[in-house]
Image (cartoon, rainbow, N blue to C red):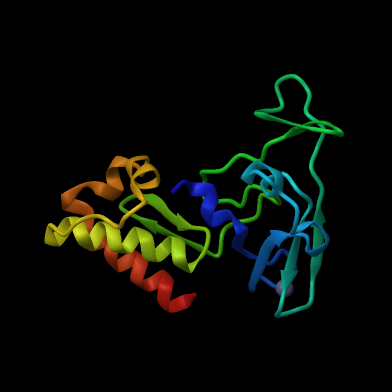
Length: 164
Ligand SMILES: [Zn+2]
């Protein structure tokens, strides 16, 4: 499992009301993707249930220095950059983010948060790590895996989940 598996539904802070909004593949572009890269680079839509704000994201044409490229029938597109505390499409702050251990703990959605919690709790109790999650978890920053940070990391994850 990789980080982008959690990118189908990304919770962000609404740019208009500061409430919880959802970024997902545009409803007209949900089907027909053979590869994950197809929906990752498909048009996306932000929807806020709180204030009904809607925003559209369309893939940009790739040019030199723009980042990773994905080649489609319509030409090369820029692949959104995954891996930080902002959403890869609109660049908005993730809804699930919180200062922790001098860093920022973040997750795209609740299942992502729950996987992080299961991993950190498992290492505490010496249980096996969740199946299929190794790739994502091996890439976690060292401070999240450090034994001395476990209590603070778990508390931050639970606080985020309670507010999700
Ligand atoms: Zn809103």
